[in-house]
Length: 219
Ligand code: DX5
Ligand code: ZN
Image 1 (cartoon, rainbow, N blue to C red):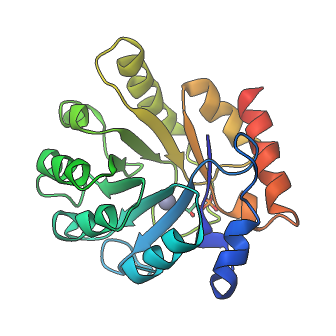
Image 2 (tube, helix red, strand yellow):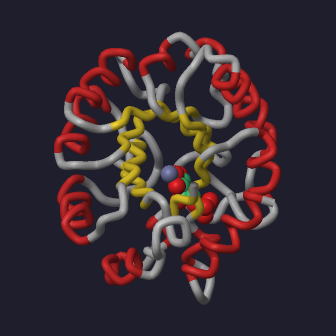
């Protein structure tokens, strides 16, 4: 699956930018990745629930909300209640990730857990049994257009093994520095869902960029 990140889109023309990646099922974007940043958990500020509500009203694409915020235990459920498909919180920020996953699911969303490049995955394997998606960050969260950190693929491989052996039941997502080259390594390591910001929105034709990424991931 391909999830374009609107972080690299033109925020003054958001609806058009979303339409630009929306194709027929299996061709355009599968999910729309929405980066929520609070200028505390990460040194950048983007958008919040009002913009997410407007997006939900203007697209049929499932919203994949990636919350790079402090205190997700307090704020994340609102994004689920609003109608987001998947709500991802950072393991480094959540006080009670198991309870938070239960609350997100009770509010009707899939629950996602994100992990920064330097955070090890092993201590969180048990808590992942409460989650539907694991978002492996392949750049430091905060900004688009950074270089892919290939060493995080060890975490992808570990998660993939645990899914394939039936110890976990979740989708593995990767976020940061994904382009037509790095997507092949990530696919080989076992990623199910690829987030791409600049590779899609810096392209002249975002729809074609999505298709190109998909065909490289499938190669
Ligand atoms: C970064 C965000 C990413 C960002 C990726 O903190 O989580 O979703 O949009 O951008 P690229 O694909 O340009 O690395
Ligand atoms: Zn993201």
